[in-house]
Length: 137
Image (cartoon, rainbow, N blue to C red; front, side, top):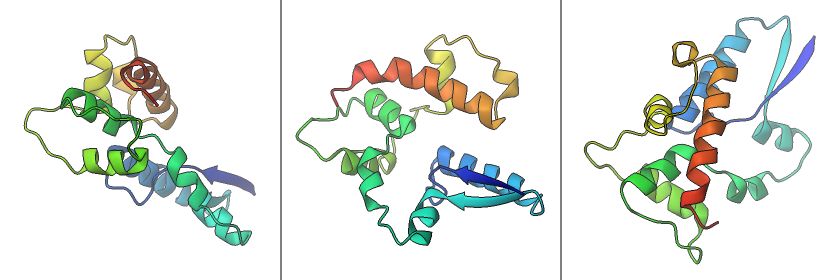
C-alpha cells in the first residue's frame, strides 16, 4: 500500500479547494492502493500544531483577483486576511479561473488537458510566475 500526502485547501470554496477534493475523491476510488492524508490531519496525527502553516499559504486566484480589482496588498497588512477579503469580494466581469489567467497572460499550455492534477499544477505555477511581480510580499 502506498502512502499519499495530499496538500491542498480541501475545505476552501475556491477552485483550488474543488481541485483538492477532486484529487481526494479520485484516490478514494482505490482504497486498497492508497492511504490518504491531508497535511492538517497529518499534523494532528503526530500531535503537532498545523496553524503555523496558514500564513505560508498563497492563493494565486486571490492574488489575481486583487490585481484585477485594483485592490493591492499592503505589506503592513496581514497577508492571510488580505486573501480572505479578496476571495469574498465580488465584482462583475472579473475572470480569474486558471484557464482565463493562463490565456490572459499568453501562457503556452495544453488547455485541453486541464483538470488533470499535474497539468493544472504546471499552469498554476506559470500563472504564479507572472503574478508574483505584481506583489510586494
